Length: 270
Image (cartoon, helix red, strand yellow):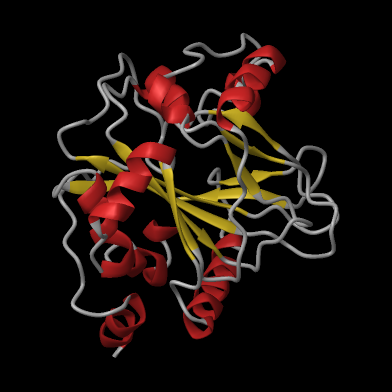
């Protein structure tokens, strides 16, 4: 899969690209099965909704489930990321935000690179996020909202709240924008919220401002977000690094599979 120059220019301008139904139903069904298995694996990689036993997010599923490991080398996912970033990339972070029906909480307005710069000493925003819809996403189940073009001004905020919820993973609340900052950016940029069927993909900049509302609907909204980093842009933070399930250690360049991730997974399983 190769992006056109028009698509590349659109990404540079707006900070995101949307591809409806990039994966088919059979593929998304297989990934949801893998997620269900992974949420049953105990450990600190599971983040729960506050005051609940519902999973809010799970990290590093590609370390435990072969479907996700293969997905990171699927040419439909990896090749556009390499075009927009650099030839040599690795998985910096992998998480799935589950946002369950009837209560999945909001994600505050933030920029991802702020967290990685603060917590990991990441030198530059030489990364790209890949958001894969594991469920149909509509206006009812808490879709992600982006401020197009907001990435071009760099970081709006470069510190964290003193009362951070965790040292290991930064919740968006810890680095959220203020109401005046958001109002000013929105006046310039407007808002857009890609929606579509399961299997749709959005590529977005680590500096684009984004957030989402609570899920008050009866429909879950599980969103896989994998972040590729330039292999020359490794963290340089002082002190002990964050756990490997939060910040991946394997910085070897990824190369694409010859087929889709399911084809590779079938070959491995055989």
